[in-house]
Image 1: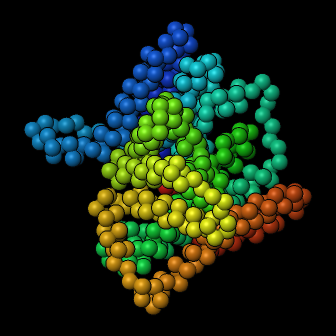
Image 2 (image 1 turned 60 degrees about the vertical axis):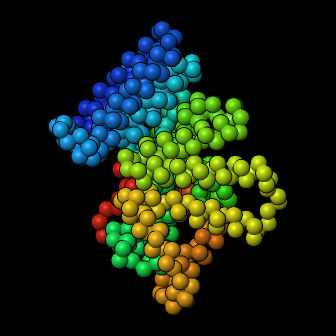
Image 3 (image 1 turned 90 degrees about the vertical axis):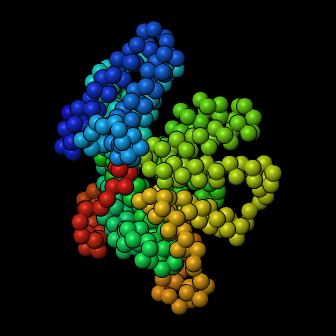
Length: 431
């Protein structure tokens, strides 16, 4: 627990203070619900806490300038504070904790255990989202935590470094940042390459960070939930959300979609609930309209898929149909990523407008045509590469510990030799 608060305080002392205050409020709220059985009142207080902290520390500072313009006669107060580190993720942890107590899944934890659960430093910045019923028993385990096969977390750590320092950072510097920073000066093919590159950059970045924190937690004797499962292998949008940021998608399902009614109140209400849940997911990611649009685009896509499944039930799919389904799903996701990555909605529309000017002749003559072909080939073989990575990882973990440092050192040397200079960006740390 001390290490978790020291980590947050190293980034910002105010972030650590805000997290401590919020955690104490959650601890006493859990006791209140447990002693009084007033779940409805507890949920209301929890909602007020979440809205209050999100508004005060995340949304208000970002929206103050536009609000000041709208209400010029009122001098709005200035909040000179960075968005508290990990705010979005430890608020999710608090929801899981309070709901689990209200549902009698767990009893209120000790104060120290509650503080550690909410602040656990490997996952407080960018997830995965730990469920209270899964993580608190690990904290309060009666037997000492034991470190099993150390080679597995070390291999995962090496894979994380490859994804973060090499793949994600190279794609960002080579294709993504130059184009998204000034889309008006890019050609249609450069815009397409940048969108494809960003789709893979955010995957390598976020899954790499997840590997990193999962490995660190394992070295400390903790188990974190699986967060990615070959997301670009998805054959439809519903399948994608079962593979991408799994801890978030299941959280949205269990704590937003199902409480809204889920699919229990008819097909139309099911789709409305889905739209609301995905729009709220976009709002959680950021304060800009582009994030809400990103969530709404995914919500609309899921609704369209539900109607398609209802009216045109799927038939047996062969390899060609499966590939076409994957391609269609991937390009829909890429379309949504444009709004996610663009600095604002105007920039997103400039990118889409630029892509709309694409000519067939440029695909054959421009050098970016070869890059797009390489992305296409990589996309096709991605499922096989993913399976190969799992098999190779299993084989490496069987190498006797005496010889294990040699391939590990060679792998890390190659990563840092080819990796771009500087530290990689942790994309989800911004949320």
